[in-house]
Length: 199
Image 1 (tube, rainbow, N blue to C red):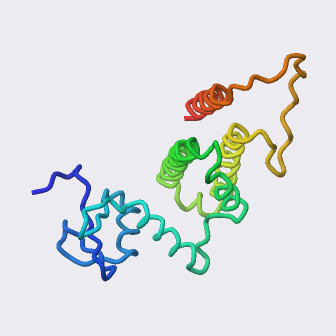
Image 2 (image 1 turned 90 degrees about the vertical axis):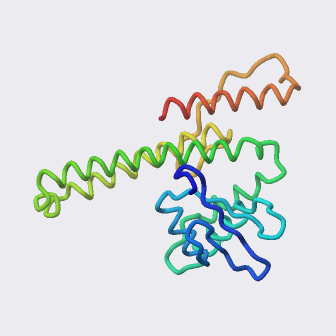
């Protein structure tokens, strides 16, 4: 019997069919998307070679979801910026940055759900009649946008549209150091400190 904390193995066959070894049934990309939403861990393996192909399959799920009417979550400017980082020096920090940003976002969402649950538990009808849910949602959205904008300021030296540019530091007389790796490490450390302070 497979331990609960062991990811379920999904095998992908040459005919593109996906087989869930945990339930001994064939599944679809939609089934895998539901498993992700439920927090079920799984890995996808090529049935012939045993190669881990989880990443391309998850990417395919996102592609399928983005193509459904009314389900677009990834704005075009974000997609353009993400594409521009491929092959760039920053490519190595983007995955860690996005992962930390999503973790922080999830924590905020969980806090919001708990606040709503506590409020509904006390007076659900009053909550529904009033403007409290809208105000709470607006406040949550504002905080999430601030979190995202602060993170993006750390990520790029250029101001995001609609935000004030950071004050320019006093110009140095000395020339910039040519050590780009050290500079990149300093930026990464600053970004990590900022993310830790937001959590």
